[in-house]
Amino acid sequence: MKNTDTPKTAVLINIEAQTLIICNHGVASSSYPISTAKNGIGSQQDSGCTPLGRHVIAQKIGDDAPINTVFVGRVATGEVYDAELGRLQPKRDWILSRILWLKGLEEGINKGSNEQGGCDTYQRYIYIHGTPDSEPMGVPLSHGCVRMRNTDIIELFAQVEEGTPVTLIEG
Image 1 (cartoon, rainbow, N blue to C red):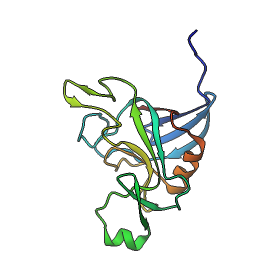
Image 2: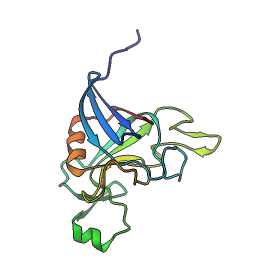
Image 3: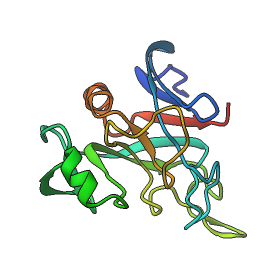
Image 4: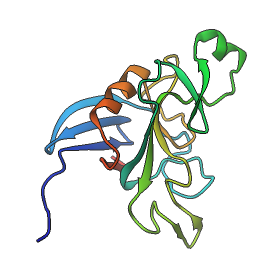
């Protein structure tokens, strides 16, 4: 028998609206401003774009890390972001507080490869993660990831599990 139950918790990311919505039993319960890719929508390797489609949270990284913890390669560096660190390293792409690593579910769209090459969200290291609070939300500025305020990603992190569905739509 096929299970058609609505997942307990699911995440919807609307790229046009630059909004992340948490749904519980199919009902929107929370909404957060986000920032997706400056390069727009796309799934190809090295495109710097945010992918569309059905995904799941493959890994949750950073549980219990202090707010503004800096991550490189999904490992806490021991640094805690502040304005001075940001001033000293203005070109650094900050991944802060928590990481939700996404895995695509649609072969040739956001998983594996297609005629143009690699299109695998997981292998592209596409995350939902915290960013400096000085960075604007509601404006596409990332390198492909979904950026959130640090307090928001910590709140989201507590509400989802590995395997939680995440759907990214154009608008």
